[in-house]
Length: 391
Image 1 (cartoon, rainbow, N blue to C red):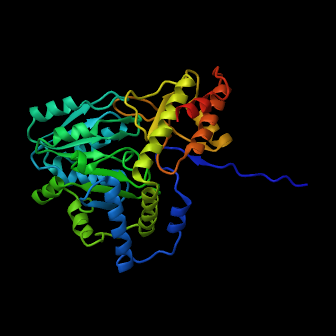
Image 2 (image 1 turned 90 degrees about the horizontal axis):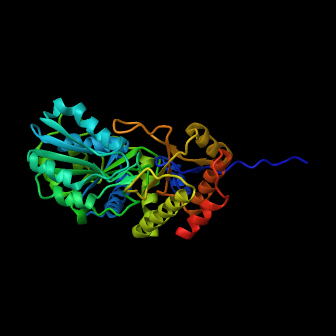
Image 3 (image 1 turned 135 degrees about the horizontal axis):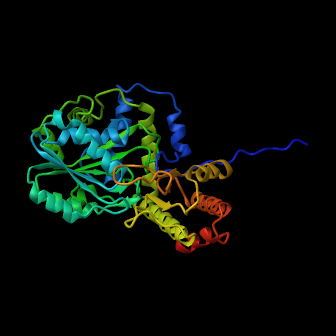
């Protein structure tokens, strides 16, 4: 009798791209429609309204073709004042990226200086340091900060930072790429001027869309300055079209259709329930990792993603390959930057979007199994037992 071989179920637990729900995939598989039609504009209007609710704002949330990096770069170049300073806060790979963007545009934007606040990887930014920099340099026109630094699994106190920046003329641009739809984010309530996110994280879509929420002060700034050295990235073009439920350039139509379904799923679950689910999974995994003898990489952990250091003697590539090939579990490794070199030294697991307790249990079983196989002295079943006790 022939033996049936079952395909190993694959669980994508990387912190981007994340798993996409079947409902979203089905919507994206429908025949494409033309974007200069009433049908598309109706879909786009619904997406915009749902994005406002997820970002907790009554202000415009623009849908940009491109990644989160595209959206963040557009905000940076569109809002900096010529002849001003900018303040960039980095405690990981992505904060450093926003520093690099302003370095690249320094000449075309006529920036006087890119003031950098560098935070040790794994620590949240110090609001007092930001406040002091703003006092020392009253001509700072933009402050960039990361809410959830994906590379270090670290969350910052954006609410407090927003309150500080709000007292100045500077515009606060927040990287919410692994925060929106996963962590509590109150754009209007906290006074965040610009909130950027991307489709491929907690919003449960493939990569390809970036989103820019614009507060009243940001919209006013757009009217005061012109974008330096850019065309597609000029947010004025996107805002003008957004007001007509449209986009200035050809959009990825089926991604936008899929985003409508994913946002509907978030609202049906309830945004606060999504925050709670994400937090519960993160709390349980942190407890399980500690019980396995693993050291967490962050002193200010984000609920979006949890990271841990490898025990001595564990090879990153072999470990993650075993998780993938033997258990169907996909997780992320570490990254290198100016502030630290974590490639090969840590691993990260996501709690965002279309991930549940069963996915997380399967990941913990696989991680524990491969740690034991690599020689760690751990009692089998520890990870899941502690996870269950913690959630």
